[in-house]
Amino acid sequence: MVSCAGPLPAPDALLGDAIHTDTGRVVDNTYDVATDSGGTLELRVEEAERRAEHIPHEEIWPYIGLTPDLARRVLEARYDVGLLLKDPGESLAETALEATKLADRLADLSDGCVNDLSAMRFFGPGTWRIPEPLGEVDVREHMTVHAVPDERATGSWVHTHGLISSGGPSSRSTTSRRT
Image (cartoon, rainbow, N blue to C red; front, side, top):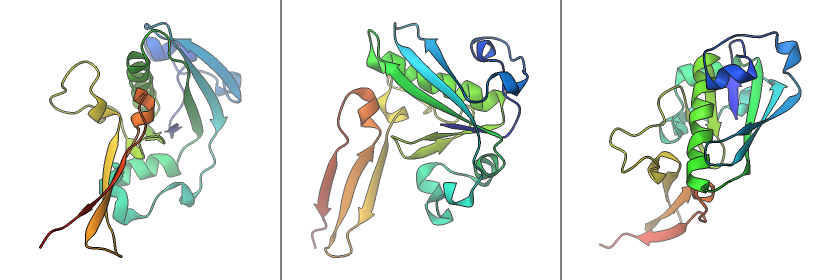
């Protein structure tokens, strides 16, 4: 989902030059977007529900990519644009990459913040790419690894979020510290 604090671009402008539009024509509408890999993405434009509970507790912001500016974008959002993978086409990985690029472009054109629900992370324009990707599609750009201390034991609960978008399950593991 992309929370957009600024004006929305016209649906066609997401793939080319930004042209702002009369949002009355796009709000509460759903658009199918064909991907280069033969997949289909669904965009749903809605008026934003600006509520403080959409922002996680500040102490976890560093772990999920949230910053004060991105939190502002969520709290000041005029529109929420849902972006769903409707059909993976020939390559699930390529279609997921195209969806991420589209969310990034929308955030850039509309003062937006992307909330990648499956990966449990937030990002702003241009901040989702890692400095040295392993290839065009690098799973590290689409998942989050969390390590949570286990208060009942001497170990940690290590788990991932977001692998489902790459066709794999999220993984979970418990580790122990040895003394």
